[in-house]
Image (cartoon, rainbow, N blue to C red; front, side):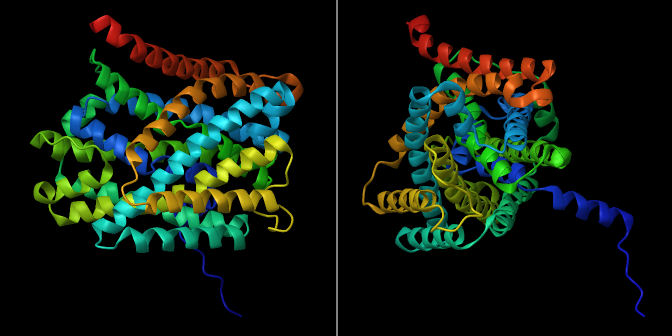
Length: 416
């Protein structure tokens, strides 16, 4: 009789922790998508380390908001759109779905643009990389069940490690980094405020809330096992924002120091070559490709989950295309339309990205107020409704977003 080989205690602990990870890590990792990487690159190259403190603030807010969405999914077994329709009626739901659809379509187009940019950095034409990526992701979603999709997306999340490695290649001033993390800096300037809003808007997104709650419901998580999900969500949000910080550090330590300001992720990768060498550029491009591939499947999924919930269609990766034709059909349609738009010669991708991010910024405070009311509703959540500290933090991050948005609007009048 063979003896059973036992792993060392620390390895068993690591294995147990990794087994917990799922929707929370996927959602937070997909937030570091092509527009997100572009936003962090612009922030680092334009303002150096000055916006790192905001990442710390956002991390707290994101943990609170995503935990709330996950908890609602576990308690009710329903997605965000489903609960909004039941509680607030068709008109509000229709407005939210229309804004979400337009914003997510624009952001999905941006993900394919990220795949095209990453492919070109490796010497592959977008007319090859974009169709291959689109077909692979469509086949994965149409043919695989939830567990298989989750494993592939978790594997893609590892691509973000490339930014950590790239930072250690460039060797930043860690003392300056540490100071910027704990010392808030604010510049009375429209561009600085716009960058702040962009960082908030690309980190805490409406689609992430819809996707996470729907995937928790789809996975069948129960409150008896919610402790594991809470760890997944908290670690995912923290890890996603650590990667965001590393992108800012990487571009601040190289591009900002050299006086080079970039407008997108591709420019950042190319600009790194003479400053930090080919390895830093390759690592940056690898992270962009992995993030774009992940987000290009998660974003359309969040849209189709929400639309099917809102209007009562069958949905979920554990259902077959025959059982949920609208769910899978909508996913394929969004993917194909986005893919074809990116392949159009001379298409102005930057305005599309700006429109999608603007709609996200408009939708986010409204959505946060709606889900805060849902999470505090005794009839819906029972004993699992929000605690006081959670409400304080969630309303604080909502207020921050609203104040920054208002200040951005009135700033030109103040400086006139």
